[in-house]
Length: 64
Image 1 (cartoon, one colour):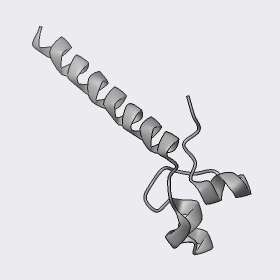
Image 2 (cartoon, helix red, strand yellow):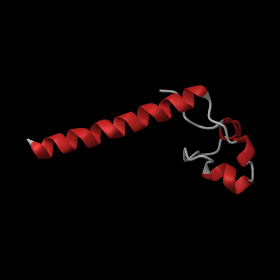
Image 3 (cartoon, one colour):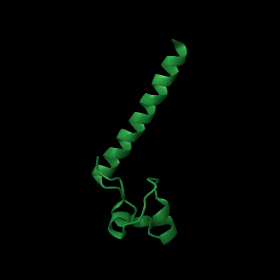
Image 4 (spheres, helix red, strand yellow):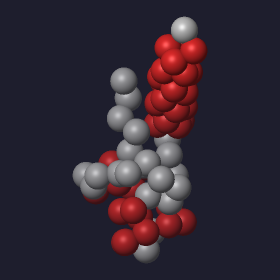
């Protein structure tokens, strides 16, 4: 999968917490430049879909 860092964090090799704006950009006062790349946004969407699937599967397991 593609890394989900924001452009500024990736360039500076900082860890990104995937928030909007991320913690690194908030600390560095670069919130205006905290933009996710299209590939990063896709990974975030896949991550949230995976979390939803896990939650639905656990609910289904409780029902059956």
